[in-house]
Length: 82
Image (cartoon, rainbow, N blue to C red; front, side, top):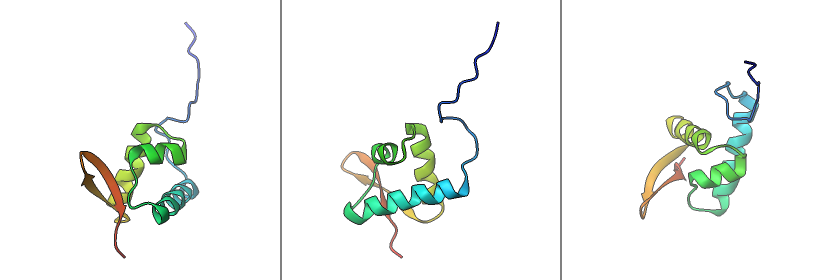
């Protein structure tokens, strides 16, 4: 049986540094007009899956750029005070 090779942009391949910077810039711009960002917003901004959006947000929390908070019954991410 032949195996198809399909790339849907949802692989575990490492993200290029310039792509990380681009994603962070999109998120920062969004947070200039909004008090918080959610997974769905990251998916729409960056064109990624829910799992990748979670990884992006978790990485930004780990890097100290965002903090994870509860807003009503939802997890949201706010920009950390400088």
